[in-house]
Length: 327
Image (cartoon, rainbow, N blue to C red; front, side, top):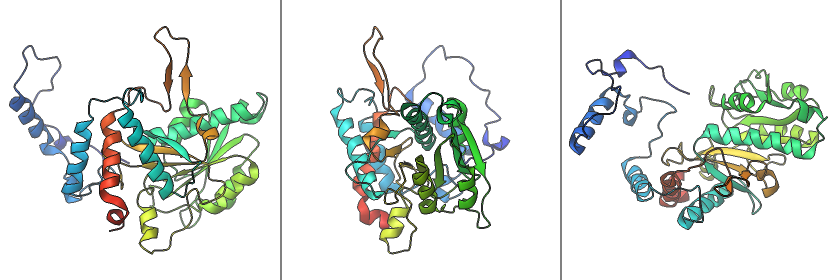
């Protein structure tokens, strides 16, 4: 979600810079200009904005800042060069998988955003279908994904990118995914279904368990978009509140996206995409072997992956701990 930009957000007295300055400016000049520029920004520390900033308090923010800057130059494109980042990412995945009902088979990677996590889930689903069905099968010729109307638009972006039709179904009277409508929308071309925990428009958790059961019976994948709830719902449960099953504890759930930079309070951009097993994750990965420069292989969409975001995510999870998030 986003906010509409008001004209008052911009510095009307300043002309926009259109070329590189002939002479460099001092550090103080640069930072003073930047501080002035943020004068019209929304007051997120005062709780005046939704969905763009998730503030865990000054002490937590300081931990994140220091961890990020400690690794701001490192690049997770090559984990062999930076084993520290490999350690951090692996442990973030392990901690997150444990929170979300995963066992030792659950694997995944960090991404730059919830959108990238969702895009990778759709790409992996398309590649999974291509690997498991003949070219003449509808799942390969004209793949479809069945979703509720409230699903995040990143699904649409992924469908547009990868030639996958997104089939929307109406919501129920309770504004959650309609189980009957989604069941009826499944066809021989369907490769995946999606549910949200929660969906952004209404903040409601879709009925994941019955939806995943439909996917399981149909022999297709089921993705849970927990970008907003992935790092708050597990702690709501641990605090003693009733919480519907929504994660890898549910049979049929094959992948989950969750944003560390939301209620995990990590630095942007830090999200993750988890798969139930390595066999599913391998469909997300890309490798090109014939480049004169050597092997080019990436687990997610990006090449360069900022080490600061990975390090800061590891830092805040260890700093907060289960008790911190529950409080």
